[in-house]
Image 1 (cartoon, rainbow, N blue to C red):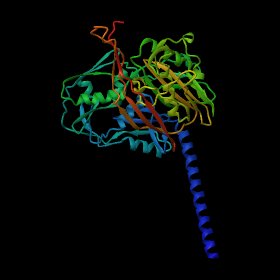
Image 2 (image 1 turned 30 degrees about the horizontal axis):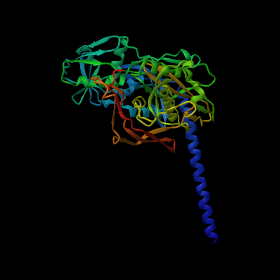
Image 3 (image 1 turned 90 degrees about the vertical axis):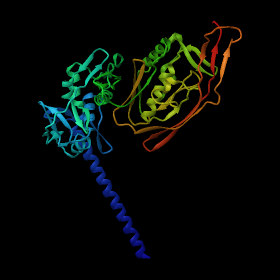
Length: 475
């Protein structure tokens, strides 16, 4: 019996020792990780591509889950990320009037491993051991790039200097292509948000560089001598600047689009955004949309526009404000905040599904329906919102990393069984062009799941069907 007790104690002591050893090693690794991260965040390094070197900052290489990821709004790093994602071993390139072949090349994983492994790296050659090849490669392609304010025409000779040939396909060199665009004054600069003067912040569109790279590569490999590419634009996440005591970082960014809204709806959205431009939430502080935005009426600057009621669409002051509450709600979801009160619209409206899908909207109505959530973090979190080009964007700002959030659509049921048509004044008028009063909307049910770290909560939304209504009168 004593032998059994002694054996149990030995096993217990051994288990405690193992746990303590593992905890100490984990703590040591965590301390080393933080020190290493702090050191390299203040340093620079050089990357050399085809004998041309450029300096990059470590602060733009963020650490997450014990691995490094390139994550920055700067197009310079997007170009680098795009370059590193392509396998260029044995790829051919044109330089100094001759074709060469890359014998060895760093990919994204190789470089990130070296950055994580080495304490003080200074310089890396992305391509090395290139050899001269004999054959010439014909490239007769001409590409026209149509930007908003200018058109750039790339000649075959210019394109030839910016491409790789890999497995009989041309691949544009993102770094060389970016240098070409910037030499022709294509602006990729990111606007700066000054938290001390945020009221005057203005965003701007910049060319969508990753999409442009994809379009160029598709065009290069089509059997067409001339191609025209209409350049798409994107709304960038701004850089932060302030002299606040605490440094804030942009943790997440969300947006909704209301392109196609009428003047009054657009005006109401802008008016509401101004009233909620910067939301500051202290630890454990609750947010109420209705309390924060104040009275919604003509006296407070709102115009008449359509709102959704039980009777259908009715014109009231403040129509469109729900676009703002829905965007703020989506930001709160992505911040990981506990949602205290939220209601979906009674009908599924396409405005609220442009950025994600049905089921993540939030309607408000004074005295009846509010949007409320709570900052559960032990530090202040801010939501900054602004309007630009029929888009509302909300940034989640915090001095420390917030929880990992994953939002997934689990169920979406669309029921057309109640599809119907209501005709008004059909017998009283002979009008050949009836007016559509309401479009048909199906019954929709959705279920979303949000995972905040290891906790999962569900988001249920139910939307009623709406018949199509047409009026044959001349009114």
